[in-house]
Image (cartoon, rainbow, N blue to C red):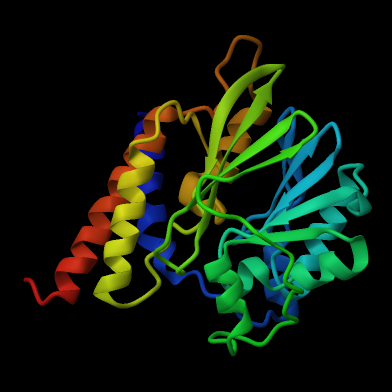
Length: 277
């Protein structure tokens, strides 16, 4: 693995615990602005500086992963339009987990564009509870994604995994991306952060990471926070890519190394929680 990416992976892992949504000042909002960009033939980044939103194009409409929150939801909507897409074509909004920064804008996508929102049943139940971080417009309960279920939209298929940890119902998704027509297996781990407490939850997280580690053929890491998989650094390389160069987001080696880091961090967290030294 490239030493630069290895270092960035470690830095990203150490910072992953501190991603908390909060109301944004005008200067903070400016700092969050990111011009949208295409990563694969069918996948686009429409998120912010610190929290991701991904747009997946199919032959029967659009799928959006995560809604951002507050003023950032408007940034995502504008980014979708800037790329030449119509938000009215969003058929499904897949929420990776029920934290404010990922689900806070879901109601807007429902009301303005008719998007169908999908979460696991456990996270729908979490949304129904009083907010633990910040108040936000709660989405109307639509569809529940269960472990092992699939969603087909035209020729695009999503395969869902319930990978609890950061929330009880973290939703992870496996799907295909294309580079000049060539397919690669991509995976969006719906909750890689360790920003939760309790040994029981940490044990669930460890089991989820170990389960993901058993999946074969994953080549592309699609994170719901861009820093944890070097999204912007890789995009810089993508912009300079020459014919014959590998795609910088296709990196199964760093995917495996990243999972190793997540597991080590969770095991250390569990040891502390159980009173180890």
